[in-house]
Image (cartoon, rainbow over all chains, first blue to last red; front, side, top):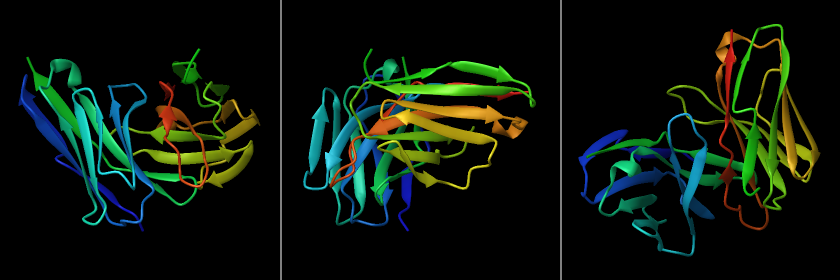
Length: 111
Length: 114
């Protein structure tokens, strides 16, 4: 049974710092891994999708890596800004229609 | 309009009311989902529709009744709800194929049951 874990559960950093969020999964047979951002009371916004054949995906200040063999993905945020404050979730497909979500990392970037 | 849109954004209802949540996707996807998000709990998958056919029903109480009239629209009909049903209800869509596609969410409908 696939399990997805995100550590740390919460993170508070000063503005400008580079940071890494972690996502671990137990079953390495995944098609892809997706990173989301969620602001309080809002829906999830897709940030990056990494296919199983890829090692990295980049979008602006965000870089996501995938290491299937070790069951890990990291989301790197460069030069963090207060507007990056949100909860970040990762998810992997499980079966044809299910996605297994991590419990998220709540990020606060202090001005 | 683009992406996934949900209405209403906020809904307050009594335990004896009947109301509906609506979701519309403008992405040409063939699968649509309802998720429930309660405070301090992980996302819970409720229903999945693929090509307008329900393919997943995660032991959801019958007071929640989904409807998918076509591949672009998804409804969640609500009746005789309980206060513990208060949550953020999220609709999502994806393109299902040989590999599971990217998942896109709407902004959610915040439901409060009095």
